[in-house]
Image (cartoon, rainbow, N blue to C red; front, side, top):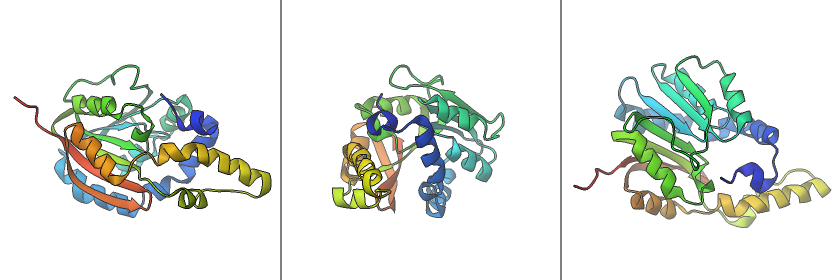
Amino acid sequence: MATHQTIAGFSDAELLQRMVDTHGERFHAGFWALVAQEVMPRLPAQPVVVDLGCGPGLFLRDLLQRYPHVRGYGYDVTPAMIAHAQQLGCGPQVTFAVHDVTAQPLPLAPASVDLVCMTAVLHLFDDPFAVLAEATRLLHPGGLLLLYDWIRRPLATYLAERLEGEGEARLASRQRWLRLFPVHNKYTSDDWQWLLAEARFSVLCSARLRPHFEVFVATPQPASK
């Protein structure tokens, strides 16, 4: 599968550091308030949570700090991300592993998961429906999908928020973000709603938590008889 590194030319170390540095911008107080209000009340007391595309593992670390009875699994295609996650000290309740979901299913039984989370990763897949089908396989009836991803923005706005440096460094930064622009700005909010409906998910709630990020809480629709 394509990664932000292969598209933009980031090294694994550069992207890892960027994700660590910007973690608080994505997972801010408003995000956790939504989780507390819209997600956790719908889960059992000891939920099983999968973070697909977990990056450096900080979301599962923070989730466990807030909800100590969580059992978590974090998967990412980049070994450097998993190596960082495994050093967070999450303990035996959280398992991190390198895995490419486009190559093989996740090593978990059907209907064994209460919550599947995907943050800023589903837009990377050429076939998002295959990934959503894997989420459906994992979730038990009534389980939840927490999708938190990019929303289309105008090019000028997107670049203005991201350009760094001066002179040659600024030109290099612009080229990097121009390569990422069509990937990050692939979907509108309506597109995400349509994708979820086509994949037979019912959206329970959604919220624009950042100007360029929207979160959707959804549940698989019952299988047709």
